[in-house]
Structures are given as C-alpha cells and as structure tokens.
Amino acid sequence: MLACLPPRWRVTAFVREGPQVARLRSAGVRVVVGDLDDSDTLARLAGHADRVVYSAPPASDADGDPRLARALAALGAQRLPRSLVYISTSGVYGDQGGARVAETAPRRTASPRARRRVAAEALLRDWGRRLGVATAILRAPGIYAADRLPVARIRAGTPAIVAAEDSFSNHIHADDLARACVLALFRADGGRAFNVCDDEPLRMGDYFDAVADRFGLPRPPRLPREVVRGRVDPMLWSFMAESRRLDNRRARRELRLRLAYPTVASFLETTDVRAAHPT
Image (cartoon, rainbow, N blue to C red; front, side):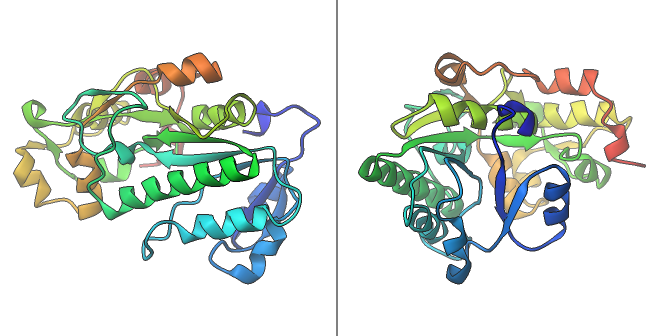
C-alpha cells in the first residue's frame, strides 16, 4: 500500500507489540504500539492521521463491535481525520444461492461473525454522518497473496464439494485490496459500500484445483456437500456453505479501481509463488 501513496505522505500503523513492529519500521512506517482492546492505549490514536484505514475485525466474544466504537471515540477526541475506510467482509450478504450480488442486495447474515460486521458498518456510517468524516466500507471476500493460498489445506487432503453442489466464492489479491483502500480514502464519501473483488467468481473447488495444479499437488477429493460439512471445521464450512457472485462494477466506476490481478489465474500464471510454500 505504501507504493500507492504520494511520496509526501507518511504512514503510521497502530499495532500490537510483536514481530510486525520491526517489519513495519523497516518498511518506513511509523509505528504506534497499542491495543484496540486496551482503553489505556487508545489515546495514542488521537490526532495522528489525516486519513485512516481500519482493518481490525470485531472481537469474537462481543455483541456488535465495541472495539470499533472505542477506536472511533479515540479518533474523535482531537483533530478528526478527513476520511476513514473500513475493511468489512462480503459475508454480510450471507448465502445468496449463487446469485450476482451488488451492494444494494439484501444482507442475509446467518452467523454471529457476519452480524457483528453489519453492526460495525452501521456504527461507522452513523459516526461519519454525525462528525462530518468521509467514510467508506470495502466489502472484501477471500483475500489471497503468495503467502495466503490454501496450500496447507490441499496438502492435508481437505475435501471439496462435488461440482454440481459446490458454492461460488470470490477473491481479491492483497495488493488490489490495498490499492482500493487508498483510492477510497480520496474518492469515497457518505458511508458508501463497495464490493472489492476480482472479475471472476469461482466455484470453491475450482479455486482449490487451480492452486493445487500450480503447486503440482493432487487436487482435493470431491465429496457430497453434507459429507464435506461433517469433515471440515465449522469456520471453514461457514465459507464453503455460502454461495454468491459479487459484482464489482461500483468500485470500478466510482473508485476507478484497476486490478493488477483481475482473476486468480492471472496471479498464479504470472507470479512465482512457490517460494512462499516450500515442499
């Protein structure tokens, strides 16, 4: 994301103590160490940024998103940012039966995780309207990169669903999501939501097959839907069970987003990703 910003801009990251601190500093990022769950550290957020990208998920043990509420309160304690981009999830749409889904589609949240995201989106919109901060919501699907591919899952022999029963999934490369964040900081307003995804929804099994082929691995076994449900963990099943095809035309039109990787295949074919997953 640093490459997308004008040279005069300085990037500050608010992160927990850990190995990421040194990595960020080596990339030229100013690091503020804190914890969104520790109110005593949140004052460090105030007045640092003219524009903010918020990427923290809601806490799994809470209703709504008190973590985001505390962060917004801290950001509003001094000079307000001019814009704030919130990275949400396409999970807010729930299962759409494979239908094409635009940002105006009804949200059919079936899981507590998705309901927390819906609450967070409403909280952000209300905060932006009250305080006059330009806000945007980026609904991202499966985020991938060279080191974020399901290689370990494929090597473990995790099954996929037979093609006739399989769900549609959507993807976005991490670099393209970062690019969308920067564009939204300057081109979005009014709590506008955007589907930030690539151009080619894939059946989930086809996605696993493409990665397996790239790494020379056996393709995952295909089993009936209910059999797979009993063999994978509940978190993975929550992704496999929902089927939708995201429409990204609003992001292309309003943010003028141009994707470096418009399909998963375009990434797998043109980039040497094997070094991130040694045999």
